[in-house]
Image (cartoon, rainbow, N blue to C red; front, side, top):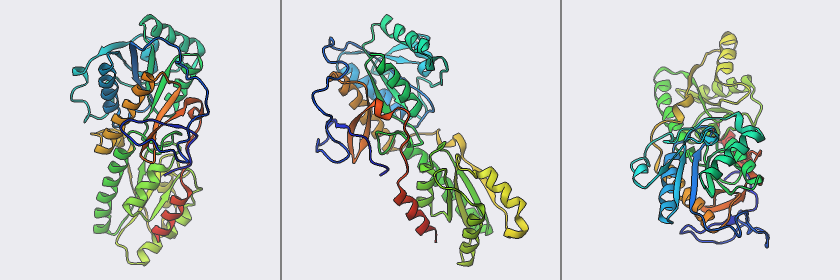
Length: 362
């Protein structure tokens, strides 16, 4: 889907284990961080960074697959801040009943400046040791997995679960929350297109994604937008204006531009430019900014299933004595990528999709 992923090992959670260019077996022999340790008895799970629809499904899967192995599962509240503060509780099967269809995260999420320091991370390790916890599962995106890698480098067994609506995380073609966020954006595009056609208007719709244009690009393609502005490509307001004029000249009753929040000309700046040059450009733009609406609501079936599979794979990794990895999806196979290959990196967009969007806009 996106750029080629780092070498990774396939995991069999009821899946074929065929080896492909995306899923190369790691060089052997290299002992996993947990080799030789006593069997796991206690694990902890936390959600960190921006919430993503499907996180609750992942928590549920961690708890129930962990309990199935007779493990004691601790839920850490409020991410790494809760880990440092020893804010956690034991979770059983019934504690996670009914949450699979709920958005957000029952454990809460927060960013922790203290955890970025070595002293903060050592405090977190002291808390884990004090609780007798053998391993940690971290559900989150780039920043969260960088934190997971930092703990792994300090010798603690950690497995990451790929979860971010931005879909910019190395180690997974698609991450938890992306499908829901994209469908929310697409519904908004379809609704705006209806009213735009009724009034022969042009609309801007801004979607989330930070510095990654994945959500904007895919939503624009799926929604039939006339133009898209993303951080990966320099945006020229004059070019966008020409695309909209051309669309009207072809007889279209509407014009729609999808803008990524991290684009140089986001919705606010693009709308201001068109307002300042209205007489010359010939029209102005109505603006809709989706914002955090994309994070809320019930996760789609695809996100529930992805979250369930990845979280189950995370506990399987630990049961096999392997840690220091991120579990993700590639070619419908669950793979494990070393956290060291994930931390601090961002998955680029598929340039072929960018070219396709330009063709379909015409």
